[in-house]
Image 1 (tube, rainbow, N blue to C red):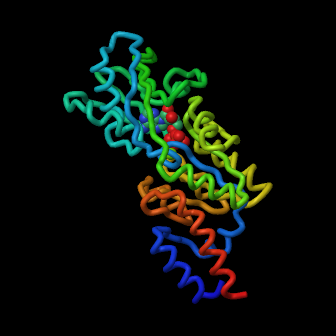
Image 2: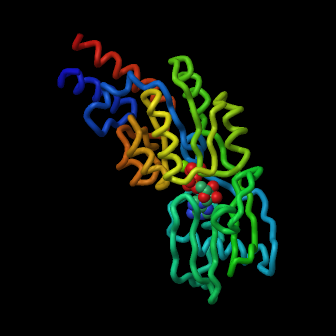
Length: 274
Ligand code: ADP
Ligand code: MG
């Protein structure tokens, strides 16, 4: 597109809350054939709430929640927010480590404690019924906490728009619950991939990109590599700074249905020069 057309197009996009960050976005947008969504924080609000807790060793419910909150202190993951109300400043964590897409570890009262996925905490990996956070101390599993998240109000409409535009749709999630498949069924997205590491997400879209132009949507630190590797990348405005730095487009207000608007503006911008 001509510089004038791009300037006009950029102004229209900005008014819609669509921030274009790289040159070439206008040329790439109309070519997208396949859209891949992260789940937590992208298709869903990412404001998780605790629905139940199962205790499996000596820690009480209060202690387990306090331990998790202490380990999660400073974490920007949506899961961390669900526990922040249980922060107890008398619990001291040393040697804290964050492992993207897995969880956190740290030493509490001389015990090595871990919070995160079943794979990370317990070394095993079964498909779980909902988003579940595990806690262990010195390799003894102490608690399993079930969390619930809500689908964004704009998600269903965005999926419908993209389908009517002829885009193939997929979900790529780090979550290992049957919710990934259930959410796909609810939204009409049959191609779902779960339990993916940040590297696993990147390998998945590398495969997709052999068959067509792919747009990846994400919000988390764990999405930064896949966003950087996608033909076109879209970050949520409320997402982690690193995901926004890796993205071609940022959706202010987190409104997924604005992407279809962006494609339409880009198509018109391209037509002006023909
Ligand atoms: P998603 O792709 O759904 O956004 P992530 O890749 O960020 O998910 O995380 C994958 C899984 O790793 C989560 O479902 C959770 O079990 C675990 N996990 C990651 N980060 C954390 C954290 N800060 N606290 C607890 N669990 C975590
Ligand atoms: Mg996410």
